[in-house]
Length: 88
Image (cartoon, rainbow, N blue to C red; front, side, top):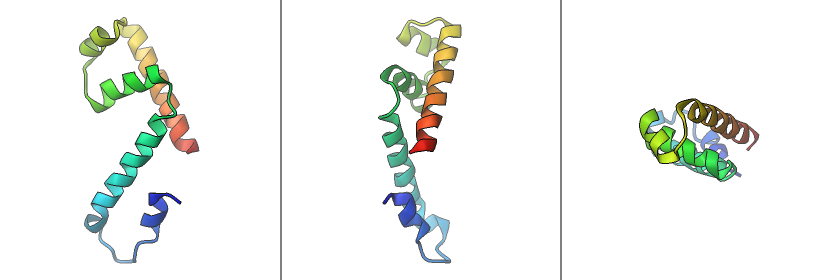
């Protein structure tokens, strides 16, 4: 049973602010679990761009990829992440 199930059982009238830390932990745990199912090359691109905020130039320098290839890789990485997240 996941933490989202636990949040779903919270008492009526509970304010969102009361559970903000719990929700944040649940989202973080769900994202971490989904990331473990993403191929390593896709996971690296996702983390560098979407978590660490590298811009296209920096990401291209780190991965040694052309901008068009990088955009395609990022598109596939996001699609894979979405797929494993929705099936988890």
